[in-house]
Image (cartoon, rainbow, N blue to C red):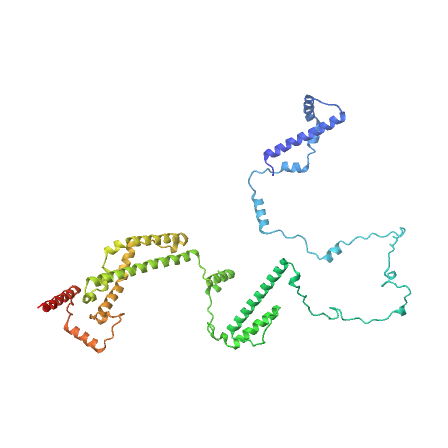
Length: 466
Protein backbone atom coordinates (compact mmCIF):
# COMPACT_ATOMS: atom_id res chain seq x y z
CA UNK A 1 0.00 0.00 0.00
CA UNK A 2 1.19 3.55 -0.78
CA UNK A 3 0.73 6.64 1.29
CA UNK A 4 -1.42 9.44 -0.24
CA UNK A 5 1.55 11.76 -0.70
CA UNK A 6 3.61 9.01 -2.28
CA UNK A 7 0.88 8.06 -4.80
CA UNK A 8 0.35 11.71 -5.82
CA UNK A 9 4.07 12.21 -6.34
CA UNK A 10 4.24 9.04 -8.41
CA UNK A 11 1.42 10.20 -10.70
CA UNK A 12 3.06 13.59 -11.18
CA UNK A 13 6.42 12.16 -12.18
CA UNK A 14 4.76 9.63 -14.48
CA UNK A 15 3.02 12.40 -16.40
CA UNK A 16 6.26 14.38 -16.67
CA UNK A 17 8.10 11.32 -18.00
CA UNK A 18 5.41 10.66 -20.62
CA UNK A 19 5.44 14.25 -21.85
CA UNK A 20 9.23 14.42 -21.89
CA UNK A 21 9.39 11.24 -23.93
CA UNK A 22 6.97 12.58 -26.53
CA UNK A 23 8.86 15.88 -26.72
CA UNK A 24 12.25 14.17 -27.15
CA UNK A 25 10.87 11.93 -29.86
CA UNK A 26 9.44 14.93 -31.68
CA UNK A 27 12.70 16.90 -31.37
CA UNK A 28 14.75 14.00 -32.62
CA UNK A 29 12.49 13.63 -35.65
CA UNK A 30 12.75 17.33 -36.56
CA UNK A 31 16.52 17.50 -35.88
CA UNK A 32 16.38 21.13 -34.69
CA UNK A 33 17.80 22.36 -31.39
CA UNK A 34 15.68 24.29 -28.86
CA UNK A 35 16.52 26.75 -26.15
CA UNK A 36 15.30 26.63 -22.55
CA UNK A 37 12.46 29.11 -23.01
CA UNK A 38 11.35 27.44 -26.21
CA UNK A 39 11.29 24.11 -24.42
CA UNK A 40 9.02 25.51 -21.71
CA UNK A 41 6.58 26.86 -24.33
CA UNK A 42 6.61 23.55 -26.12
CA UNK A 43 5.88 21.70 -22.88
CA UNK A 44 2.90 23.94 -22.15
CA UNK A 45 1.60 23.48 -25.68
CA UNK A 46 2.06 19.70 -25.56
CA UNK A 47 0.03 19.44 -22.37
CA UNK A 48 -2.94 20.95 -24.16
CA UNK A 49 -2.82 18.73 -27.22
CA UNK A 50 -5.03 15.63 -27.64
CA UNK A 51 -1.87 13.53 -28.04
CA UNK A 52 -0.92 14.19 -24.39
CA UNK A 53 -4.35 13.02 -23.31
CA UNK A 54 -3.86 9.84 -25.28
CA UNK A 55 -0.43 9.20 -23.67
CA UNK A 56 -1.80 9.80 -20.20
CA UNK A 57 -4.47 7.16 -20.84
CA UNK A 58 -1.79 4.65 -21.79
CA UNK A 59 -0.67 4.13 -18.19
CA UNK A 60 0.03 0.58 -17.08
CA UNK A 61 -2.69 -1.48 -15.47
CA UNK A 62 -0.52 -2.08 -12.39
CA UNK A 63 -0.17 1.67 -11.79
CA UNK A 64 -3.89 2.14 -12.27
CA UNK A 65 -4.62 -0.66 -9.79
CA UNK A 66 -2.33 0.96 -7.23
CA UNK A 67 -4.05 4.30 -7.68
CA UNK A 68 -7.50 2.76 -7.39
CA UNK A 69 -6.68 0.71 -4.30
CA UNK A 70 -7.31 2.08 -0.85
CA UNK A 71 -4.27 3.87 0.51
CA UNK A 72 -2.62 2.70 3.76
CA UNK A 73 -3.86 4.69 6.76
CA UNK A 74 -1.91 2.86 9.52
CA UNK A 75 -4.69 0.44 10.61
CA UNK A 76 -5.07 -3.18 9.52
CA UNK A 77 -8.47 -4.34 8.41
CA UNK A 78 -10.18 -7.00 10.48
CA UNK A 79 -10.49 -9.32 7.46
CA UNK A 80 -6.74 -9.14 6.79
CA UNK A 81 -5.87 -9.73 10.46
CA UNK A 82 -8.14 -12.78 10.74
CA UNK A 83 -6.76 -14.21 7.50
CA UNK A 84 -3.17 -13.70 8.67
CA UNK A 85 -3.86 -15.40 12.01
CA UNK A 86 -5.54 -18.37 10.32
CA UNK A 87 -2.65 -18.82 7.91
CA UNK A 88 -0.13 -18.66 10.77
CA UNK A 89 -2.07 -21.20 12.85
CA UNK A 90 -3.09 -23.62 10.09
CA UNK A 91 -0.60 -23.82 7.28
CA UNK A 92 -2.25 -24.23 3.84
CA UNK A 93 -2.22 -27.81 2.63
CA UNK A 94 -1.09 -28.98 -0.77
CA UNK A 95 -3.93 -28.59 -3.24
CA UNK A 96 -4.98 -31.23 -5.74
CA UNK A 97 -5.12 -35.00 -5.55
CA UNK A 98 -2.05 -37.10 -4.82
CA UNK A 99 -0.98 -39.11 -7.85
CA UNK A 100 1.59 -41.81 -8.24
CA UNK A 101 4.43 -41.66 -10.75
CA UNK A 102 2.65 -44.15 -13.00
CA UNK A 103 -0.48 -42.00 -13.08
CA UNK A 104 1.57 -38.93 -13.92
CA UNK A 105 3.26 -40.77 -16.80
CA UNK A 106 -0.06 -42.01 -18.15
CA UNK A 107 -1.59 -38.54 -17.99
CA UNK A 108 1.32 -36.95 -19.92
CA UNK A 109 2.75 -39.51 -22.32
CA UNK A 110 5.97 -38.63 -24.10
CA UNK A 111 5.49 -37.50 -27.66
CA UNK A 112 7.13 -39.65 -30.36
CA UNK A 113 7.90 -38.01 -33.63
CA UNK A 114 7.19 -40.44 -36.51
CA UNK A 115 10.00 -41.08 -38.98
CA UNK A 116 9.38 -40.11 -42.54
CA UNK A 117 9.93 -43.22 -44.75
CA UNK A 118 11.33 -41.08 -47.52
CA UNK A 119 14.09 -39.63 -45.30
CA UNK A 120 17.34 -41.60 -45.17
CA UNK A 121 18.16 -43.60 -42.04
CA UNK A 122 21.12 -42.44 -39.96
CA UNK A 123 24.32 -44.36 -40.62
CA UNK A 124 25.56 -46.22 -37.52
CA UNK A 125 29.01 -45.34 -36.25
CA UNK A 126 31.55 -48.04 -36.89
CA UNK A 127 33.21 -49.16 -33.67
CA UNK A 128 35.55 -51.97 -32.70
CA UNK A 129 33.68 -55.11 -31.67
CA UNK A 130 34.77 -57.32 -28.81
CA UNK A 131 35.13 -60.12 -31.35
CA UNK A 132 38.02 -58.29 -32.94
CA UNK A 133 39.84 -57.69 -29.62
CA UNK A 134 42.06 -60.64 -28.57
CA UNK A 135 41.79 -61.86 -24.98
CA UNK A 136 45.55 -62.31 -24.63
CA UNK A 137 48.43 -60.95 -26.53
CA UNK A 138 49.20 -63.15 -29.54
CA UNK A 139 52.48 -65.02 -29.71
CA UNK A 140 54.08 -65.47 -33.10
CA UNK A 141 54.08 -69.13 -34.15
CA UNK A 142 51.85 -70.18 -31.24
CA UNK A 143 49.10 -72.69 -31.95
CA UNK A 144 46.29 -73.95 -29.73
CA UNK A 145 47.85 -77.40 -29.37
CA UNK A 146 50.94 -75.79 -27.97
CA UNK A 147 49.02 -74.66 -24.84
CA UNK A 148 49.57 -76.65 -21.61
CA UNK A 149 47.32 -76.63 -18.53
CA UNK A 150 48.79 -75.37 -15.26
CA UNK A 151 46.94 -75.93 -11.94
CA UNK A 152 46.29 -72.79 -9.88
CA UNK A 153 48.49 -72.29 -6.84
CA UNK A 154 46.84 -71.61 -3.44
CA UNK A 155 50.02 -70.45 -1.79
CA UNK A 156 49.08 -66.81 -2.13
CA UNK A 157 46.41 -65.27 0.10
CA UNK A 158 42.94 -65.18 -1.37
CA UNK A 159 39.65 -64.28 0.27
CA UNK A 160 37.73 -66.21 -2.40
CA UNK A 161 39.63 -69.44 -1.66
CA UNK A 162 39.65 -68.81 2.12
CA UNK A 163 43.42 -68.74 2.27
CA UNK A 164 44.20 -65.86 4.67
CA UNK A 165 47.71 -65.82 6.11
CA UNK A 166 48.27 -65.30 9.82
CA UNK A 167 49.09 -61.86 11.07
CA UNK A 168 52.79 -61.27 11.37
CA UNK A 169 53.80 -58.15 13.21
CA UNK A 170 56.34 -55.98 11.53
CA UNK A 171 59.84 -56.37 12.88
CA UNK A 172 60.70 -53.78 15.47
CA UNK A 173 63.25 -51.30 14.32
CA UNK A 174 66.45 -51.08 16.25
CA UNK A 175 66.88 -48.03 18.46
CA UNK A 176 70.45 -47.66 17.30
CA UNK A 177 69.33 -46.96 13.73
CA UNK A 178 67.00 -44.09 14.74
CA UNK A 179 67.72 -40.46 15.32
CA UNK A 180 67.43 -38.91 18.79
CA UNK A 181 63.95 -37.42 18.29
CA UNK A 182 62.41 -40.66 16.96
CA UNK A 183 64.16 -42.71 19.65
CA UNK A 184 62.84 -40.52 22.48
CA UNK A 185 59.32 -40.62 21.03
CA UNK A 186 59.37 -44.43 20.69
CA UNK A 187 60.77 -44.94 24.20
CA UNK A 188 58.12 -42.63 25.68
CA UNK A 189 55.34 -44.46 23.87
CA UNK A 190 56.60 -47.84 25.11
CA UNK A 191 56.72 -46.54 28.67
CA UNK A 192 53.15 -45.25 28.46
CA UNK A 193 51.94 -48.59 27.10
CA UNK A 194 53.75 -50.49 29.85
CA UNK A 195 52.33 -48.15 32.51
CA UNK A 196 48.79 -48.58 31.14
CA UNK A 197 49.21 -52.37 31.18
CA UNK A 198 50.39 -52.32 34.80
CA UNK A 199 47.41 -50.19 35.83
CA UNK A 200 45.02 -52.53 34.01
CA UNK A 201 46.54 -55.60 35.67
CA UNK A 202 46.41 -53.94 39.09
CA UNK A 203 42.75 -52.99 38.58
CA UNK A 204 41.87 -56.54 37.53
CA UNK A 205 43.78 -57.96 40.49
CA UNK A 206 41.96 -55.66 42.91
CA UNK A 207 38.59 -56.65 41.49
CA UNK A 208 39.47 -60.34 41.70
CA UNK A 209 40.62 -59.91 45.30
CA UNK A 210 37.36 -58.19 46.26
CA UNK A 211 35.34 -60.92 44.57
CA UNK A 212 37.44 -63.66 46.16
CA UNK A 213 38.70 -65.05 42.85
CA UNK A 214 42.10 -66.69 43.15
CA UNK A 215 44.27 -67.16 40.10
CA UNK A 216 46.69 -70.05 39.70
CA UNK A 217 50.24 -69.89 38.52
CA UNK A 218 49.37 -70.31 34.87
CA UNK A 219 45.86 -68.85 34.78
CA UNK A 220 46.69 -65.63 33.04
CA UNK A 221 43.72 -64.35 31.08
CA UNK A 222 43.94 -62.12 28.04
CA UNK A 223 41.50 -59.22 27.87
CA UNK A 224 38.85 -59.64 25.16
CA UNK A 225 38.91 -57.48 22.08
CA UNK A 226 35.19 -57.38 21.22
CA UNK A 227 32.09 -56.12 22.99
CA UNK A 228 30.64 -59.61 23.09
CA UNK A 229 33.82 -60.90 24.72
CA UNK A 230 33.67 -58.17 27.36
CA UNK A 231 29.99 -58.96 28.05
CA UNK A 232 30.80 -62.65 28.53
CA UNK A 233 33.71 -61.81 30.83
CA UNK A 234 31.52 -59.56 32.99
CA UNK A 235 28.79 -62.20 33.17
CA UNK A 236 31.35 -64.83 34.21
CA UNK A 237 32.70 -62.64 37.00
CA UNK A 238 29.19 -61.83 38.28
CA UNK A 239 28.25 -65.52 38.28
CA UNK A 240 31.43 -66.52 40.14
CA UNK A 241 30.81 -63.78 42.70
CA UNK A 242 27.22 -64.94 43.18
CA UNK A 243 28.28 -68.55 43.70
CA UNK A 244 30.95 -67.54 46.20
CA UNK A 245 28.36 -65.62 48.27
CA UNK A 246 29.56 -62.08 47.68
CA UNK A 247 25.99 -60.79 47.23
CA UNK A 248 24.59 -62.50 50.34
CA UNK A 249 25.28 -59.52 52.61
CA UNK A 250 24.10 -56.80 50.25
CA UNK A 251 22.29 -53.97 52.00
CA UNK A 252 18.53 -54.25 51.52
CA UNK A 253 18.60 -57.90 50.40
CA UNK A 254 15.16 -59.49 50.78
CA UNK A 255 13.50 -56.19 51.62
CA UNK A 256 10.97 -54.28 49.49
CA UNK A 257 12.39 -51.53 47.36
CA UNK A 258 11.49 -48.10 48.68
CA UNK A 259 9.71 -46.14 45.99
CA UNK A 260 10.18 -42.42 45.68
CA UNK A 261 6.78 -40.62 45.57
CA UNK A 262 8.22 -38.19 43.03
CA UNK A 263 8.69 -41.02 40.51
CA UNK A 264 4.91 -41.33 40.04
CA UNK A 265 4.15 -37.61 40.24
CA UNK A 266 2.52 -36.62 36.92
CA UNK A 267 3.55 -32.98 37.38
CA UNK A 268 7.30 -33.78 37.42
CA UNK A 269 8.93 -34.66 34.11
CA UNK A 270 10.98 -37.84 33.95
CA UNK A 271 14.22 -36.05 33.11
CA UNK A 272 13.62 -33.58 35.96
CA UNK A 273 13.04 -36.46 38.40
CA UNK A 274 16.25 -38.22 37.32
CA UNK A 275 18.24 -35.00 37.59
CA UNK A 276 16.84 -34.30 41.07
CA UNK A 277 17.72 -37.82 42.22
CA UNK A 278 21.29 -37.50 40.95
CA UNK A 279 21.67 -34.14 42.68
CA UNK A 280 20.23 -35.57 45.90
CA UNK A 281 22.57 -38.57 45.89
CA UNK A 282 25.57 -36.31 45.35
CA UNK A 283 24.53 -34.14 48.29
CA UNK A 284 24.13 -31.00 46.22
CA UNK A 285 21.76 -28.39 47.63
CA UNK A 286 20.88 -24.80 46.72
CA UNK A 287 23.27 -22.04 47.73
CA UNK A 288 21.00 -20.64 50.45
CA UNK A 289 20.69 -24.07 52.12
CA UNK A 290 24.47 -24.49 52.16
CA UNK A 291 24.82 -21.02 53.68
CA UNK A 292 22.10 -21.92 56.20
CA UNK A 293 24.27 -24.81 57.40
CA UNK A 294 27.20 -22.43 57.89
CA UNK A 295 24.98 -20.01 59.80
CA UNK A 296 23.61 -22.78 62.02
CA UNK A 297 27.13 -24.03 62.76
CA UNK A 298 28.36 -20.55 63.70
CA UNK A 299 25.35 -19.88 65.95
CA UNK A 300 25.62 -23.28 67.67
CA UNK A 301 29.34 -22.77 68.29
CA UNK A 302 28.75 -19.36 69.87
CA UNK A 303 25.94 -20.63 72.09
CA UNK A 304 27.98 -23.63 73.22
CA UNK A 305 30.95 -21.39 74.10
CA UNK A 306 28.66 -19.02 75.99
CA UNK A 307 27.02 -21.89 77.88
CA UNK A 308 30.30 -23.47 78.96
CA UNK A 309 31.66 -20.10 80.06
CA UNK A 310 28.63 -19.37 82.26
CA UNK A 311 28.54 -22.87 83.76
CA UNK A 312 32.20 -22.64 84.82
CA UNK A 313 31.73 -19.11 86.15
CA UNK A 314 28.63 -19.93 88.18
CA UNK A 315 30.05 -23.19 89.58
CA UNK A 316 33.30 -21.56 90.75
CA UNK A 317 31.50 -18.55 92.23
CA UNK A 318 29.01 -20.66 94.23
CA UNK A 319 31.57 -23.19 95.53
CA UNK A 320 34.02 -20.47 96.59
CA UNK A 321 31.47 -18.35 98.43
CA UNK A 322 29.47 -21.14 100.11
CA UNK A 323 30.33 -24.20 102.15
CA UNK A 324 29.88 -27.68 100.78
CA UNK A 325 26.93 -28.40 103.11
CA UNK A 326 24.92 -25.51 101.61
CA UNK A 327 25.33 -26.60 98.00
CA UNK A 328 22.11 -28.75 97.91
CA UNK A 329 20.14 -25.59 98.72
CA UNK A 330 20.80 -24.22 95.21
CA UNK A 331 18.00 -25.57 93.04
CA UNK A 332 17.18 -24.82 89.38
CA UNK A 333 14.62 -22.10 90.15
CA UNK A 334 17.13 -20.21 92.31
CA UNK A 335 19.88 -20.57 89.73
CA UNK A 336 17.64 -19.19 86.93
CA UNK A 337 17.28 -15.92 88.83
CA UNK A 338 21.01 -15.66 89.39
CA UNK A 339 22.85 -12.92 87.42
CA UNK A 340 26.48 -11.88 87.32
CA UNK A 341 26.97 -8.27 86.17
CA UNK A 342 30.74 -8.45 86.60
CA UNK A 343 30.98 -11.44 84.22
CA UNK A 344 28.75 -9.70 81.65
CA UNK A 345 30.88 -6.55 81.68
CA UNK A 346 34.08 -8.57 81.40
CA UNK A 347 32.82 -10.64 78.45
CA UNK A 348 30.85 -7.86 76.74
CA UNK A 349 33.44 -7.29 74.02
CA UNK A 350 33.42 -10.95 72.98
CA UNK A 351 29.62 -11.16 73.10
CA UNK A 352 29.04 -8.08 70.94
CA UNK A 353 31.68 -9.07 68.39
CA UNK A 354 30.31 -12.60 68.04
CA UNK A 355 26.70 -11.37 67.76
CA UNK A 356 27.79 -8.85 65.13
CA UNK A 357 29.44 -11.54 62.99
CA UNK A 358 26.39 -13.79 63.32
CA UNK A 359 24.07 -10.93 62.28
CA UNK A 360 26.23 -10.35 59.19
CA UNK A 361 25.76 -14.00 58.26
CA UNK A 362 22.01 -13.64 58.85
CA UNK A 363 21.88 -10.61 56.55
CA UNK A 364 23.67 -12.52 53.76
CA UNK A 365 21.42 -15.52 54.27
CA UNK A 366 18.24 -13.43 54.07
CA UNK A 367 19.48 -11.97 50.79
CA UNK A 368 19.66 -15.45 49.22
CA UNK A 369 16.86 -17.37 50.94
CA UNK A 370 13.14 -17.18 50.05
CA UNK A 371 10.95 -14.84 52.06
CA UNK A 372 9.20 -17.62 54.01
CA UNK A 373 12.44 -19.05 55.51
CA UNK A 374 14.29 -15.88 56.41
CA UNK A 375 15.68 -15.57 59.95
CA UNK A 376 15.56 -12.70 62.48
CA UNK A 377 18.61 -10.93 63.88
CA UNK A 378 20.06 -11.89 67.27
CA UNK A 379 20.54 -9.71 70.37
CA UNK A 380 23.10 -10.07 73.16
CA UNK A 381 20.55 -9.63 75.97
CA UNK A 382 18.26 -12.34 74.58
CA UNK A 383 21.15 -14.78 74.21
CA UNK A 384 22.32 -14.17 77.82
CA UNK A 385 18.81 -14.66 79.20
CA UNK A 386 18.51 -17.91 77.28
CA UNK A 387 21.86 -19.09 78.70
CA UNK A 388 20.80 -18.26 82.28
CA UNK A 389 17.60 -20.23 81.81
CA UNK A 390 19.07 -23.27 80.01
CA UNK A 391 22.16 -23.77 82.18
CA UNK A 392 20.35 -23.80 85.53
CA UNK A 393 19.74 -27.56 85.54
CA UNK A 394 23.32 -28.35 84.49
CA UNK A 395 24.77 -26.13 87.24
CA UNK A 396 22.44 -27.78 89.78
CA UNK A 397 23.66 -31.24 88.77
CA UNK A 398 27.30 -30.19 89.16
CA UNK A 399 26.67 -28.69 92.61
CA UNK A 400 24.83 -31.80 93.81
CA UNK A 401 27.62 -34.02 92.50
CA UNK A 402 30.21 -31.93 94.40
CA UNK A 403 28.16 -32.18 97.59
CA UNK A 404 27.66 -35.92 97.15
CA UNK A 405 31.38 -36.47 96.59
CA UNK A 406 32.13 -34.50 99.78
CA UNK A 407 29.89 -36.77 101.88
CA UNK A 408 26.99 -34.35 102.19
CA UNK A 409 23.55 -35.89 102.31
CA UNK A 410 21.52 -35.37 99.13
CA UNK A 411 17.85 -36.41 99.00
CA UNK A 412 17.18 -39.49 96.92
CA UNK A 413 14.68 -37.73 94.64
CA UNK A 414 17.44 -35.29 93.54
CA UNK A 415 20.06 -37.94 92.77
CA UNK A 416 18.81 -38.65 89.24
CA UNK A 417 21.74 -38.52 86.84
CA UNK A 418 24.39 -38.39 89.61
CA UNK A 419 27.18 -40.91 90.20
CA UNK A 420 26.71 -42.08 93.79
CA UNK A 421 29.92 -43.47 95.48
CA UNK A 422 29.67 -47.16 96.36
CA UNK A 423 29.89 -47.27 100.23
CA UNK A 424 27.87 -50.43 100.77
CA UNK A 425 25.59 -50.89 103.82
CA UNK A 426 27.52 -48.36 105.89
CA UNK A 427 26.47 -45.55 103.56
CA UNK A 428 22.84 -46.57 103.84
CA UNK A 429 23.04 -46.71 107.65
CA UNK A 430 24.78 -43.35 107.70
CA UNK A 431 22.10 -41.80 105.52
CA UNK A 432 19.32 -43.24 107.67
CA UNK A 433 20.98 -41.96 110.83
CA UNK A 434 21.53 -38.56 109.33
CA UNK A 435 17.90 -38.29 108.31
CA UNK A 436 16.79 -39.26 111.82
CA UNK A 437 19.24 -36.89 113.59
CA UNK A 438 18.13 -33.89 111.62
CA UNK A 439 20.21 -31.31 109.79
CA UNK A 440 23.96 -31.78 109.75
CA UNK A 441 25.97 -29.19 111.70
CA UNK A 442 28.01 -26.75 109.70
CA UNK A 443 31.57 -27.91 109.10
CA UNK A 444 34.46 -25.56 109.88
CA UNK A 445 35.73 -23.40 107.03
CA UNK A 446 39.28 -22.99 105.81
CA UNK A 447 40.00 -19.99 108.07
CA UNK A 448 38.85 -21.89 111.16
CA UNK A 449 41.07 -24.83 110.28
CA UNK A 450 44.08 -22.52 109.82
CA UNK A 451 43.40 -20.78 113.15
CA UNK A 452 43.16 -24.10 115.03
CA UNK A 453 46.35 -25.31 113.38
CA UNK A 454 48.13 -22.10 114.41
CA UNK A 455 46.99 -22.51 117.99
CA UNK A 456 48.25 -26.08 118.12
CA UNK A 457 51.65 -25.05 116.70
CA UNK A 458 51.93 -22.21 119.25
CA UNK A 459 51.02 -24.55 122.10
CA UNK A 460 53.62 -27.06 120.98
CA UNK A 461 56.39 -24.47 120.95
CA UNK A 462 55.28 -22.99 124.32
CA UNK A 463 55.33 -26.45 125.95
CA UNK A 464 58.83 -27.07 124.59
CA UNK A 465 60.09 -23.79 126.06
CA UNK A 466 58.59 -24.60 129.46
